[in-house]
Image (cartoon, rainbow, N blue to C red):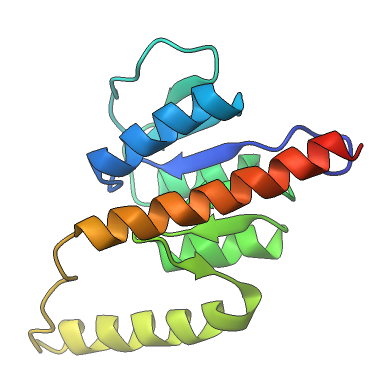
Length: 160
């Protein structure tokens, strides 16, 4: 609980790996925390009072804009999108990418700069390759970061 609001998890679901969604689904029920997946297409979610899918219209960054609009201080956002991460960090949210990396005020500027540089390279025809394949160690890192956030949330709830 932060400022009287119930903290929740927002997921940039269009590009989120299925294994990460599964981890989030289990965590939602176990920790009784609201998880909202935002995408521009229908998503299958397990029946749970803690899990919902929010479908937004198709379009460039429509899901990101909705997440940025809805996120509150203290919320957790799952995304690999650097501009979205920057927006929600500025609002006081925690960001974990699907590989388990925590994005913060301290490292987001560097990420934005690198992203923009790579975009320029690609725009000039340089083949930059894509991200490394998603691995078991990525899954484990994500689960560990999520558990740490959930424990922090639980302590906040107990201390109110």
